[in-house]
Length: 360
Ligand SMILES: C[S@@+](CC[C@H](N)C(=O)[O-])C[C@H]1O[C@@H](n2cnc3c(N)ncnc32)[C@H](O)[C@@H]1O
Image (cartoon, rainbow, N blue to C red; front, side, top):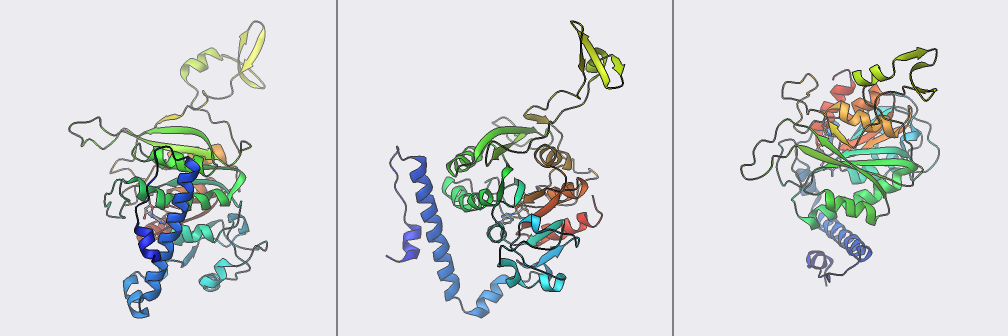
């Protein structure tokens, strides 16, 4: 049977198949369809392949690179050796090479192209935290990009190879946050657990604004963020909310160590507001918000900052493989974290560049 045919064949599974069996089938399917695509591409005459690339400007074609600053950065985990400047960096072949300790280069690395390619070029266990605001499987065209269809096989064949790579590049003490909504979160959680990530929590982002368009259903008002780690020894910084007036009234004594309350003759010091819960009540950016940069699915910096602050320390490497308008990159710039990321859409890279060069 031809590989192309095999890739298209429906696979029948008994109702009792184990998740491991499902994972293997998915892996094989994924490899087959990858192979079939490569075969198709190989058959195209060069001229057609070039034409298919269309009019994407040279500076933002896949694998062209944008470097923000020239500071050390093997720590972002790219398999690079020595690069001297942008011109050398733009040579694609330099990207895929060795595991030598790199000497170079940036606190912020952003690439235009498919995230699977960037992931494959990264070293094992080189990233402290991954945050991705992924494709939600709505089937919609957002103008800036086309979403996946809400079909389980489509969702799984897109995410499985990418999540396997994400797990590989994550450090032993690293954390992964994947943002989506209720339509695909159950499938994503299964993939995460199937590949051996440790599921830690599900955060609900209650954004309030927008989405008042369902006539015969509850209005969509929240996203979910799946939080998983590679081991149980993950980086965690205590996250606390605001100190409320009630707390101030309760911790009304003060000495050189701060505010405290007395109970049965013992001092209890105020350590900040209450520990943050897994429901964030945080308004989405309104259409006129000053933070807006003209990308449809832009998320607020405040949301992503919480994950970065909880799961990394200054100087750590954060990755976002569905970068959009570059919110994660901007947050990392503001919080002194290193950043590596990509987006398949050239417009996203241009906007990110603008934000890193002094924008919002
Ligand atoms: C929900 S948006 C991210 C929005 C982002 N959090 C922000 O604040 O602007 C998802 C992004 O993933 C990008 N994308 C989709 N498929 C991709 C792929 N295979 N590789 C890289 N980026 C991809 C889309 O172009 C889109 O910009």
